[in-house]
Length: 243
Image 1: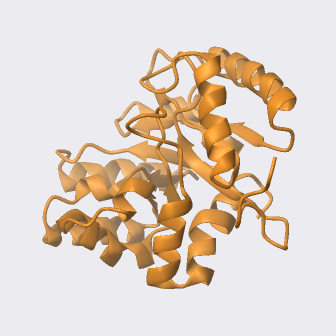
Image 2 (image 1 turned 120 degrees about the horizontal axis):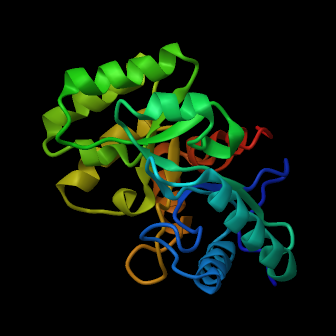
C-alpha cells in the first residue's frame, strides 16, 4: 500500500489522531470490529499512523472491557495494517466524579500519560469549570479540553478558552471545525495559535470521518508547516511517550 504524503516525517514521527471513537461497541462511534477496521483503514489512507481510541467514559464503563476490545482490535490490525499504533484513552465528561475515577485508575488517561481528554458542557458556569480543572491540575493531571471550540458561541467566548489555556490546560480542536467557513470557522482560526492538538473526533465513515489531511493543509497554509507539524505530529506523538 502506498504511503500517503506527510504520513511519516524524516525523523520518524507520524500523524497521530489523539481523539477518535474507533473502539467498537462502546459508545456512539464504531459499532463492530469490522467498522473499527474500516475507519482505521480510511485513516491510514489519509496519512494517519497512530490513533488514541477515546470512547466516551462514564462511571459505569469498565476499563477491563475497554482493554479487551483494544487488544482484539490490535490483533486484527497486525493482520491488516502492520505498523499502525493504537493506544487507549477516553473522552471524559468533566464532573466532580472525574478526579476520583482518574486517581483510582478506573478512567483511562490518554495513552497512559498524565493527560486526560475532558469534555466540558458549554452550559457549565465558568467558575465551576475552572474549579474542576484546577483540581485536576493540582493533582498532577493535565486536562486536554476536547473540541474546545464548542465552548464558543460568540466571539467574546474566545476569552474563556484562552483562560483555560493560561491555567495550564491544553486545547484540542476538531479537524472539521478548522475546515469550516462560517463565523465559528473564523473564530477557530483566531484560536489556533493557542491550540495544542487537532484531531478528527471521528465516529464513523459517513458524517464524522477519521480524516485529518485537509485540516493539516489548511493549518499549514494559515500558520506555516512548522506549527502544523506540531499540531498533527509532535504534540500528539509526545502523548505516546515518543515525542
